[in-house]
Amino acid sequence: MRIECFEKIDHVDGQPWTDTISLNFSDRSRSRGKAATAKGGELAWFLGRGESLHHGNALKDAQGCFYLVQAEPEPVSVVTADSVQLLMRVAYHLGNRHLSLQLLPDRLMFQPDHVLDDMVTGLGAQVTHDVVAFQPEHGAYHEHGHE
Image 1 (tube, rainbow, N blue to C red):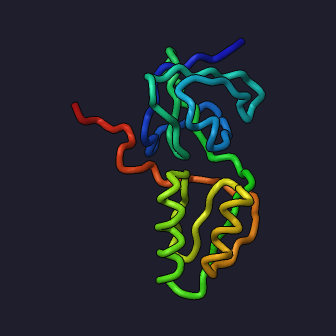
Image 2: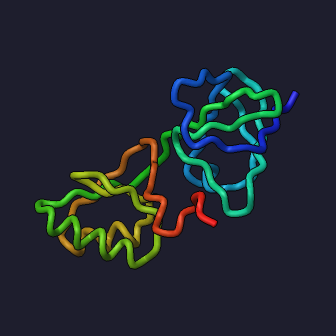
């Protein structure tokens, strides 16, 4: 039986959840989709146009059950630099390419792209590859409760 969810909950502080779904960044960026739950169920979500999911959100079904959304580990390029100034310079250049970028105090992460990896090393920073939960910045124009 497929579970259908039409409501996204931003925070489930203190609320028990029925099950979890692990989604990569691409799947969390979709307003509609389906995935297997940790307990083996099939969950489908139907959100408003342009609405996306983030690690820690929950989906709520018609019975009021919550399904926790988790960021699934996926391949990323990891950028480190010898100085904060160089790391900020790399962030500026990556940001000019409008890609999804995760900003951490000592590193940057983005979905692997050999052209961008080469640009980053050309700027003097280091690039390694890892498989981790990717949670990029939402951006200045992400959806929220304004009218």
